[in-house]
Amino acid sequence: MRIGSASKRFVPHLQNNNAAGGGYLKYLKVIWPLPITAFGLMLAGIVQITGGACKRYGNALEASNGAASRLLWLMNPWADIEAITLGHVILARDLATAKRLRIHEHTHVRQYERWGVIFPFAYLASSALAVMKGGDAYRDNVFEREAFEAQFFQRENTKL
Image 1 (cartoon, rainbow, N blue to C red):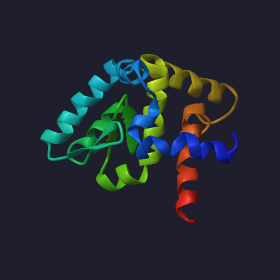
Image 2 (image 1 turned 180 degrees about the horizontal axis):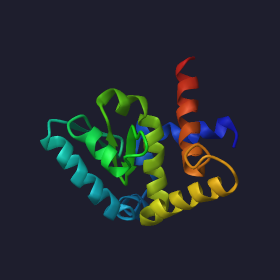
Image 3 (image 1 turned 30 degrees about the vertical axis):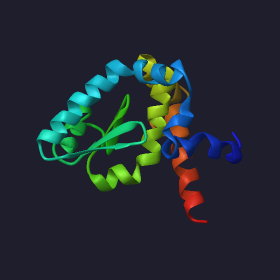
């Protein structure tokens, strides 16, 4: 993918929420990952009642602080998870982490909008394929590579 095309794909998501699609498509992007978003909203509620913060950015809800670190650990005690996207909900350890990984995690929100409820299975399949090819389950996952590219592109453009 050319870097020039990346600017059109990555940056508008946070700048203009209405640019994502018109008519019924914008509703489909919300409905398609809804079961996973509902689970994310439940976790965001736990974060909120344990003193954490929930704030909307673009078309996602970011939940951080409170019990967020503990919930992330419970999802995978063997990995050091800083943030996770569940549909239209982003769960991050703390506010600084949410801010630092915002572009990366919002890329996963768009992936959920494209893949819907099958995204977690596609993600796991991509990790398995990466490992079978001798790569890393996280860094060589195609979904993570897209998110890292978006994060890199944003960082490079803010230096100008």
